[in-house]
Image (cartoon, rainbow, N blue to C red):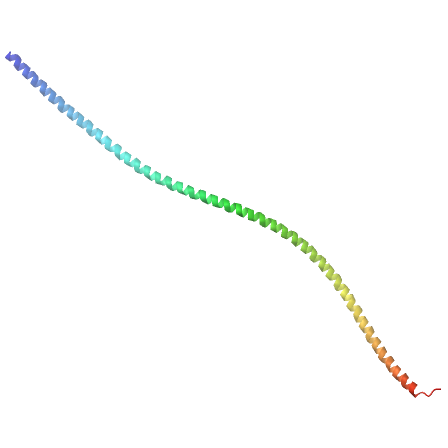
Length: 166
């Protein structure tokens, strides 16, 4: 039995050595696996940080784009309002222009009529001046004749006064 006890102890010893070697092997295996997992975990965390920072940058760009879009929409609304106001103003001015052109045409026609009347009146005035000049000349001639006749009357009255007639 001693042989068996020795074999059993030796078997237990071999079993213990095998268990220790397998534990050491498993420890090395799990350590290498853990190290690989840890490195993979670290790379993924670093990738997540990069993705997170990229996401933050893209979010900021998106917010900036959103603000620019909002500003553009406000400008578009403002420009649309201004365009509507200017179009209304333009239509009003075109209507006013048409009215003024109609008035201008009417006043031009009226001016032409007044010029024709003026020309007629000037012609009549010229005729009247000519008649007046002729009448004044006739009046002057008649005054001379009257003066001459007055002298004749004075002479005749003097002759009559000197005359001793029965």
